[in-house]
Length: 530
Image (cartoon, rainbow, N blue to C red; front, top):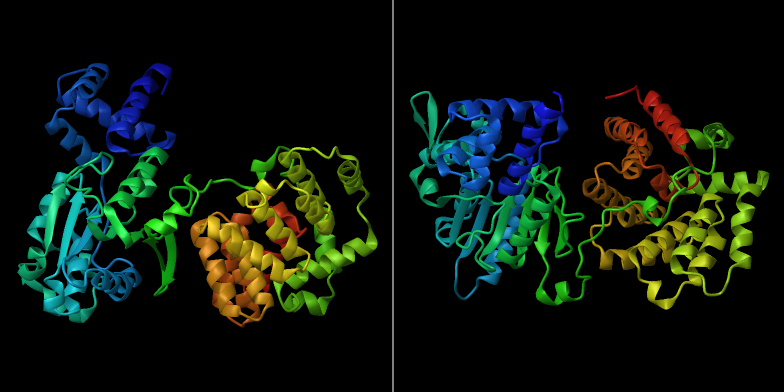
């Protein structure tokens, strides 16, 4: 498309983002151009005039027609069963305790599509007993009127029940021709509402009205602004202590600091903090930033690819096969060997700068110096620089993360764990802090704790390579070949595009090529890619 042809689809995309909150990248401009041309022709207008009409009035019939084409959901009953188990055994149980003495339990299925999710929630409540279920009210909301019509009918193909447990299938569905109809008891437990979740809806967002909110696989389609606005409405509408379930590829990282992250039943979900807990937190949501946020020029690893590969080769063959006892010991032993061979003259200018610096250097300058020392594996000197920061900088999340990384890689694990936990008190969704805690826990002999923190880090930031690498190496050492192949293959893909400054912060001196070589070698030893 030329510039004139692109102008109207881009204007259309902007209108969709403002009105519906949906995000379409440049790769979807062709689809938007086709849809715009077709809808404009049906309305008897040219695309420019059609957009004028949408922006001026937004007629309901046309808006509904567009929504039906822009939202084509794919869902089924009991999708990701582990979340429904956590809903039944944790979220509903918590809500029942809070409601003790009066009041029912309010559940919202936001972005309910054709109804499989809210009906699954109703079945979970019924399985806890009919007396309990009578106190549970489930509201389901979606913007697509066609999907809501299907949901209200409650008739589905067998394919929609592909993950439904057989006993649930037998109890709550009955044959309707070649399809299956939801039992009237379940249908009566759910009320459906047409709602644009990107807008404030007074009747939907009742202050503190919900005990549990499910909103799965919707935030990923929203613009960042719309996603943050929606999470804000969830927070206002969810009772303190209430639970929020998102899709497996979605997190609140960078969107809200008003929730605790929960990990049970093999899944992640969130619990809204109490008023006292929320008041003790910073008012701004956690920032999405990497080590590059501290300044320019820090993205390059201190060692070149050849030197990194030599570092791996410097580990004796017996150690290289098992990668010592833990990954952290490998980092520390390798660093010691390299320091014995060379004191890295390239790092000296940074050291001299620290020694000759003015006493009133800015905190940013001192952090920059610490990062340069980290690049040269001068961990103790870098910690000394951080110790000289002004008192008001001590609890800055970036400083805490850098201090925790330096302490971890220099072997001061008790202090590293303390620093990491101090960071998590301020930013519970900090993936880097969870990864560092995984290293500390493994070194302390707490394998399960290490697994939990690595899994949390990988969930919070799916692009973060290091927790995947660590999970793969632990699986390798534990004899879990399938798990090792899966995690190392994921790490290999992520390492190729990992932010170089993050490798500086978390790689313990190993650069990209060395880590890729490690993944490739261990994958080959385990039989190759899964």
